[in-house]
Length: 230
Image 1 (cartoon, rainbow, N blue to C red):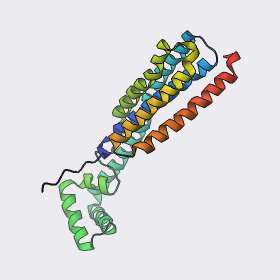
Image 2 (cartoon, one colour):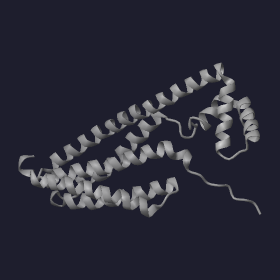
Image 3 (cartoon, one colour):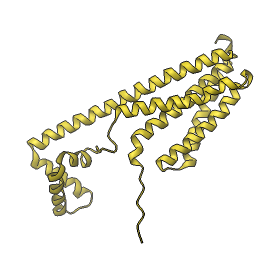
Image 4 (tube, rainbow, N blue to C red):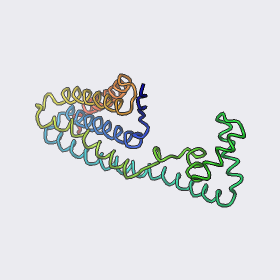
């Protein structure tokens, strides 16, 4: 019987985290902004302007924030790799012993661990130490530009969903329509993200809808409370 190929999802971690964060933030922040302004009895035009401003500012903020934070991670990884490269060049024997001890701690007997360390070092010393000593791999390494584009693009798509409702829904019904629709959007996002990552759909849906509902409820309360001054 032919064995089916195993399916893994860790190769999606880099872009999936940024995309889910961006889309979730786009839906929640834009919907909350629209709901808050609408609850303050603002006109449709003012609600639309607020929503568009939130979309543009949010997308740029997500892109900049992801790029800066992931770049910091990339800088740290690069510094560690440079240090490891220097240690391999100047103190190869101790680095080999260190690598062998890592394999012993993982369950290999000392003799086999030494053989494994020697063979892997001969093939790719820096890559082996990066993976087994530092925990850095090609799959999970920091990619600032990818994270920035994924986050900004998904934020824009997420923000457009509640924003488009402003054009079609009567002003009086905006608060409830945007709130309920956005919760549906969040539930769909949670389901898609869980499917893409191979995790529990129910748990993901519950998580994103709960926090989205809380954010919109608090924003609507603030808008209604201070509506006379907005």
